[in-house]
Image 1 (cartoon, rainbow, N blue to C red):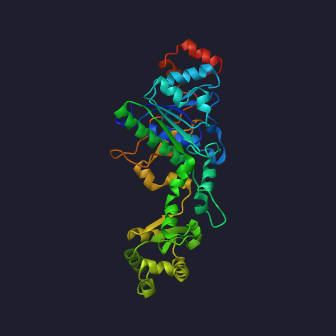
Image 2 (cartoon, rainbow, N blue to C red):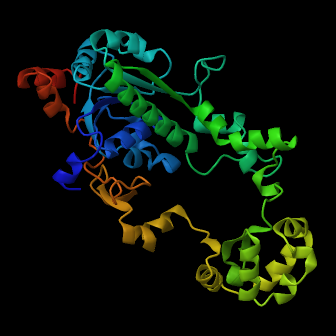
Image 3 (cartoon, rainbow, N blue to C red):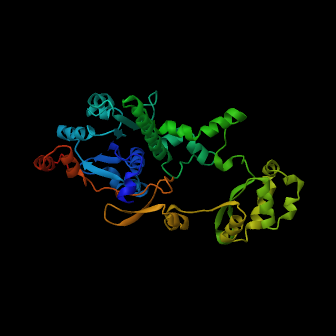
Length: 396
């Protein structure tokens, strides 16, 4: 993204100080940073531990920390807190996802900070909103289990977490939305606000459709693998050479298109299949018939026929295969980044456009303390004072 286009982003000129690790808090900062805010990540002198997570956590740091600057400070030392306060004094937003009470203990809680700057917006990312559960330790998987999402995702008797950090990411997004609302309110009142986002309440929001399903029907929602489908054909099919493809036919018009495409005129004429509701009731005998009929086709053949007729389909894709997705490559939806060790990679951009472009990459995920010197100098520290902080391992 060019310098001129960066200046046109909506939150250019907004400074965010981020005390956050893992996914939820960094997702909030990433969204604000993508929209032009200057996001300064305060991390320990040894580096955010998210940088070195193995396995399924290995992608957390490079995914959620682009468009940020890094200042490394030891907040266990008074001088480290003092340096953080210097940076906060010039900030519009403080974002944190520490355990409850930690920011207050450091003297960085909202009540203390608003005394220094009544215009400051303070966003906290927690496991639960204030209430009986607020003291509990929460993780994405914890709230998926207690919030109904794992029940809905897995088979009956086999709860299964969703295959992404959905609550962490969406919780961070809602935190950012709260910040945006607080910034708009500040324009009218001149006053900052305390914003709080949570994992559990986010998860409850995600399963709200199933809660309301119970309110409407009087029947508890069945797990997705065993649900009564709203549409007759809405399934994964195993076809030639063991390939799999998801196919959907969700209206009477689409049913006619589907039957014509695959020479199933006898099914189209069958009065037992006249409407979608009829076809749902006939799934016990209809689906085996369709599976057998479609099994000789390759997934590519089925995709071509469905696409030509505007019918919904999807290949079953691994996340790593998306790096070569032709649509993402054509639209520029994957931005090049440089990993901590210098290797190149590509990262998905925000899934929306502003003036015909997805908000892009301005800064690679930062190295530990990459911007410490420059930002402390801008906050009034002399080179000798910064060197002293470094020598005493208070800054890096």
